Length: 616
Image 1: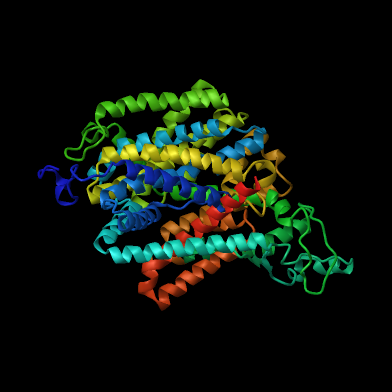
Image 2: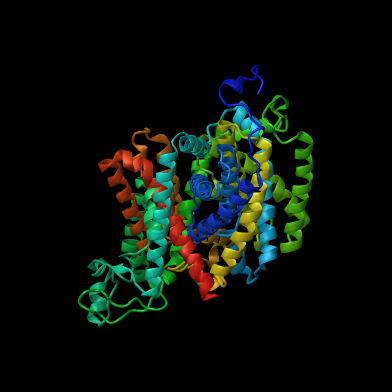
């Protein structure tokens, strides 16, 4: 990099003499990314969230090549190769946000249509490629001119530097990661093999919801068990709680207590949902009826829960208006042209970028028309809107570390819903392009930030991102079809809560059916949920920073309304364990809690995929 460039003092120069874009680096990233994409498919269908897998992929590859180096004399696995590996792996792992845990199953549930594996893989690949293209174009503006932090990129770069400065420490973290993986996988297989059930709480909901009258009739009333209050033997949820932090975990528990301890019994009491009553027993441990109460109640609860999550996320996003304004302004700023090459960065050439725009945009539009029959005008409009919103999402992610995938998809859903209210397919799948591209663009920007800090080639990273997207599309689509062969009967249940699917499906249904088709009492619940979500989101932004960690999270409370209570309880346990570890052993906690949690999530997810494969 030229010494006259302002960034020269901040970042190391790109050294193309060091092997980085090697066959083994790309292949390792594709394999690890394909495997980790299964984890995010699993977690996305369970709780609607996905996790960044950059550090996990970097640690695993480091451990693999340490073993190979010692046993076979393989060449040293250098930091730049590892960065190419984690770039490909993280893009593959994030493929779940390209619709596999949201728009695609929602579309199937509403239309009774399914896609074959090759067609679904092609669709997901086309969605993610738009995000890769946006990321390539934004590198100079957001990383070199605006110098946005992209926190996850910094964290990954620092982890890579520590690994190669302190090899023994990296090996210790790898051992903890693998230990957590095998422990969670083993426990999951034990639970499935010996049919270990949840440990349910005894007793009934307090008398104010007419339990006395029910008991007089010889019925069990509303038990804590039928309201899903339990502890579940799931290391996946414990690990998730350790990762997301105490604020989100406490908010989930608060949401579960309010929802399943107050709102759900109120729904039953008012007769808005009819549930089967069971014979009474003295401990309130009546067998859970079939169909599960939670499955019936969630058909009502998803409306206030979705309203709370959507309104809260859009309100929080509205506070990023400066980022939005800057993103839009820079689109037309000649002095900040996004396609201008950066001297010494080995960036993607302008000519290649322009060709990429033509090819990928055409590819995306053709896929929308050919696969889903979306009118060409809506398809083109959706892609153009996607470019704008993906840029906005990348900027917000760069400043905050949080990628607003949900809000971006909802903006497109609301826009297309207003244009063509009855077209469920266009509403879901054109918006799918926006949400998936926004996620992939933000993921790429974090990876490019990592590359900038370790001296990697931006051109090589862009190529690695594309290979990773390909691996993730193939593996992720296969995992989704393997796990969920009948979305209508399997999703939005106690087993697969699928809250992201519930959100996308609810918005599309609202435009198609209208408010008059909502369940009894649900309309007022929507307004209440939206109002609470907006109020909490505004409070979070206006209270002093020292108070924010103690503010309830509207997104987490809304999520608790569309998942069983035992999910939230287990997440809370994981958060408490991580908090205790940070207090009792802060140094040990800083070194190992995150990697152990990542191992627990990966272990149960991969074991779940294996069990599903064996069953099929």
